[in-house]
Length: 506
Image 1 (tube, rainbow, N blue to C red):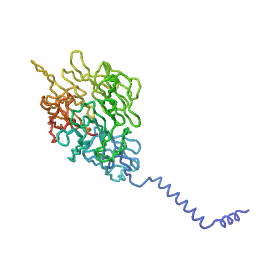
Image 2 (image 1 turned 120 degrees about the vertical axis):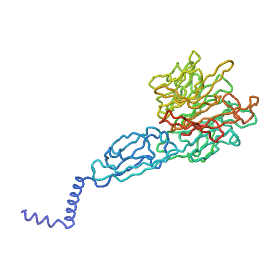
Image 3 (image 1 turned 180 degrees about the horizontal axis):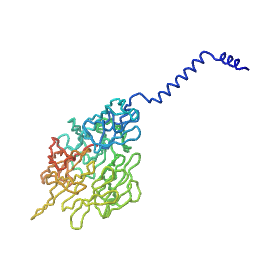
Image 4 (image 1 turned 90 degrees about the vertical axis):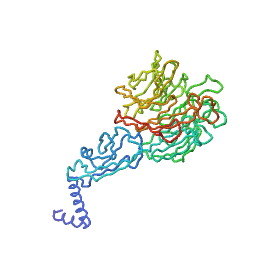
């Protein structure tokens, strides 16, 4: 076939629509090539803000901004604005920027995040990103306490400090002795006895959970928090009570709730055999089980919710929260553990010295031990601030002279770097004081009880302190803190709330 014949044949077989398609393909290919060479012309924008319209708490330490384009880091960091200001540090992973707070955001506050004039990495100075505004807020400042007067007497009461709202949670026929909040603040674990005409013994207490009615839109959710009897959801109305642990065969004494809300440890005594006593583990879908080993005394669940620090013999044992498991460690030097830092890196422990003094030690998970304080008085409690820079303590001074022998309690702050102690507030002559540090580290709550006359014997439904004395009245106090100014003079504020054993909710 000649060349002219081939061309004629090709033309005859090529339809007009084919020619149009070929032209379009070539044209689109050229346009795509030009677009790739010139770059994307759409402005960069924020695709996702992890805290948008969320309620954050002390455990929420960082938010992320995800961009649609690779960004010029310096322009983003210099133009990022938070109102009110929240100091923090920036880190990058591709198109995602993380902002980590130096300290927890103050509770009861609304925040705005703004970003304008940040630049695309490849667009240079030719264009700025689309302006972005995000919003989030922190949890309300909420605490619970045990009422002492009128219809609140012996009942759990919830108080929202921001909204000035009060809610009675536990029923009238129970006298609450102690309680602990769950990590989402949706429930409280509490020990209570029946309200009868006869004085109730601590050994008659049972464990219950009650809903608070609080539901927060948190950006992160803690691990499983179910209880063996729990069928409720976070949307439940306040005041729904479920039994967790009865006292039919065993008396229930001290208890603790794991930080993740999934485990309870309770000290129990067999009613038929007093020699059968020790800690028991209560968790979801499993009957209560005793933890093997020596019975022990005071205990505290570790921050990872996997172990138990318990006083045993002449020291402290670290037991895994698994029935029948062997101890992980033993610290013969210390007789009591007071608290852990939230991340488990530090703990406060008490050493009982041979000269009748007591020492407060700072112990790290690397094995270092530092004596912070030695006193002839008592070391009743210690709480780490969120930045692990300050330890807030409830201490006593031993007063002697003649026939006088009494202890004077006071609140103090200890600088963990210098070990310098600074007294904050002197308290009345009472040992049964409960102190609670707010999750954001900006306030202390404590109670001030008034004992009834010594001749007055307890009757049914009356509240008693840890020594069995009848409580006639009790007031709650709020001490604002200023971590940025350690030398500031602090003045406690009396709250118009008759109550005792206050605790901030997470």
